[in-house]
Image (cartoon, rainbow, N blue to C red; front, side):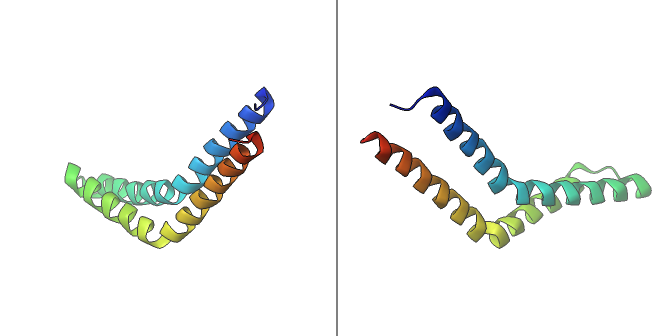
Length: 90
């Protein structure tokens, strides 16, 4: 059975993995959203789809570009989880 410290370590590892995996898409979406927001403020065009569509497209492009990195990170996390389970004898 895992101790309380080991359980907290597993949870911290999971949260860290989630942050690392989601960071590329979130940062790119944030940057594109900021650029579009500045353009909308300067041109005074406030169309909702103008902001939505480029962000979605940029997030899909980020998913294609960083997909291998994300898969590798998630696979390493899964291997760590399996090693925790293996140490329990499950």
